[in-house]
Image 1 (cartoon, rainbow, N blue to C red):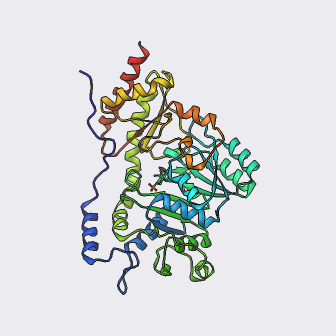
Image 2: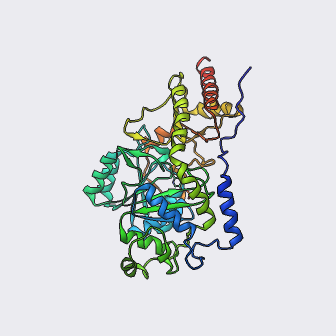
Image 3: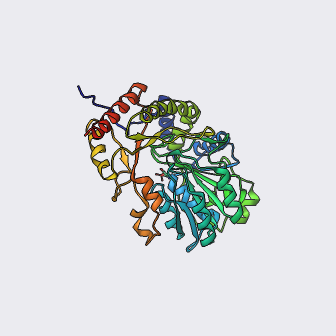
Length: 399
Ligand SMILES: *Cc1c(COP(=O)(O)O)cnc(C)c1O
């Protein structure tokens, strides 16, 4: 009997009944907009900002409509203007180049190494050669590069660091939360991230002027005073007429959904990692598959797993994945020439114009396979996935 996997890879856990009840109350009140409050009322969006800032250990926080909008506001806030060069690691999701493009900035893409980390030497060389003063670092699929080395390059060249923590909410590097390294950091609360409000995001910073610019830039209509985690009024006085309105405010419904999930995040990180380690252990011992050994001090969130199909030629990977897919195991591949469902390689962002070739990135991605790990999967499900994937690879190795 060949094993068949039946569960969908895109099914998240339900929103709790408590959150649904709170959303119902807000709907009945009619006050969905974050600035639509009555005397003495603090909006859900403002409460969420306060709670997320406290959870993250940061001073200022802005809730936004998406992670991509948070990044665009972060870039504008930091000073990116048309023609400004922005370094970005090339292994990332399309919202990153999109955010840079939206500000008029010019991406300077940086190579990744075989562990999906930003290549520090290439970062240094490109910082030097282009004079770029901004770096948006995507912790793509939760892989956290050596942050000491990143900070050293940023310090050496006076670079403002923006972290894209879409896949590292809840993760730490040498005990510091991902997001607390950057001058500004961004998170996504879109359905497939670590807390789920359908769409949404956060921008955090400890820099008061950046915080004020970001809040005004999110479209505060001069009602910024009601926000949950902001600097004092005098900082706003300096920037309030100087930040374009991007209209990217989070609403109270989504905020209520997120407030309910935040207290469970730490426990969920543990649940993700239990599942991750089953998959990792299985793939590690399967002939033809390889996983990377993660550093002890990288406290990642295993909400997805990447492995390499090294036992077969890259040209045979699509057929291998198709066979896994027909047994219910949905695996993404970053080696394809055409972007499909949430995978895209830097060379498919054609609006950026001609990019310098990035051979190491292409090489790494040519064997990179990627699996989502939704919390709706049980530990047994993870074992079943290992069995199917390793059987399919073994069948190819034996012919
Ligand atoms: C999801 C994601 C974002 C932000 O996505 P939104 O859909 O705009 O919330 C940014 N970077 C990466 C790497 C992502 O995966």
